[in-house]
Length: 322
Image 1 (cartoon, one colour):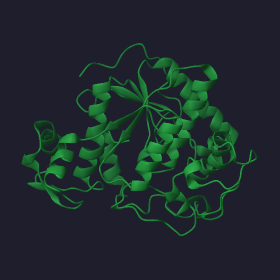
Image 2: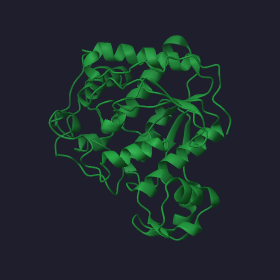
Image 3: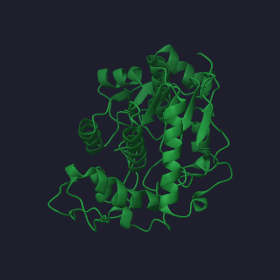
Image 4: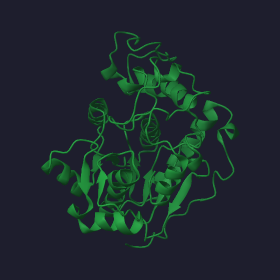
């Protein structure tokens, strides 16, 4: 792997010691997001946007689109990690809005694992023999993860599964595409493992990942800020028939002006009560109410996910997980 290029000049300390309260209102948070995106598009020669189809990455994508249109930059491609266990509705959402917004989507996949799964008609939870995989995957399992079992389950929300299906897939794509900055929609308040992130975060160790930077424009948003941004900025500005002054849907079918879910750049899963969209296999809805109407302050956003342990998250992030 090559070294990180010396043409990038960003402040890697920007955001140190900060939290969402340091950006007291939504306008402050949006202003900072625009600033970070603008710097990212100016400083990096081959940036890309991490897009999962979830609320955070779609909000990030919106900010990038706004800056691109305002300053006539070239729109970066998006990178979608296909871990083979997505909700069908999420894949439909990505396809729909990639077409609507004329986005280039690069699908990051661990194709070696995917090929074994297809050839053997595996279902999530079935075992995959370590020695059935290629040299690169075996290296990650044995030497990096130090996993000693002969098999591992085909499940996203496990140590081996998450690393192979997400991190290895992402790193392979970063290297293949020569991406020097990946624009990511993580937030300080999501997990303790992300609380110390800065707006420009170096990932330069070539022994772990292809050297690159993480560009993180929405660190300063909390969950309720994200939804406020959607209903008062993103949706009114991207959906022609949506009320200009915003409108907050109160249930699954509550959309104004005869609009349908297909018209709104918000996954229907959020309308159905999901607050996190990790995996079809291991993610459950948090409540019956739409995500933005739930008790966001006193409940855990990722409680519907099977993988919700901070020590696991910290280890995975050390290996390149988002």
